[in-house]
Length: 201
Image (cartoon, rainbow, N blue to C red):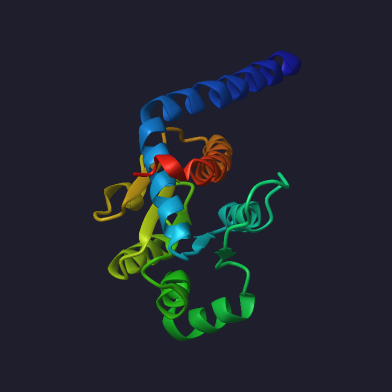
């Protein structure tokens, strides 16, 4: 009986890992492509990608930065990116003075320029510090990209973020998997735009 229950659980998890990405990308392919074009234009102007998130999303932010700074495909260009989760000292100092909710917004206000790109990751859409970071970036006229999950949470209801995608699943493991696939696509598609700059006009 326990084997049957385990089997059913594995099958259900596998089905979610197939069906959720399919629904997500069918709904968001055009927006993702447009976001990549806007990101490429920012990079072309000298902008940087600044990425942030909490928990597993903080390590995803570091992964994204590495993807852009040190491409796994040798022929592709390196692009400037930084995970705001890397500097623990700065994060703790900001948290001590301004609170945990401000750890990304304060870094962006000090480090970012209007040509930069802010990418915030939150599994359920309710990470206040991620949302504040994106809203601070928008006030600075940065390009803002948010990735959430479940029903979107506070992120899904926020106004003014340039691109905001919600993975429609309550399974946070599946949400994280789709986020990972999405940021790989972001990197690859930005590179494609750079390879075809003659088509930008």
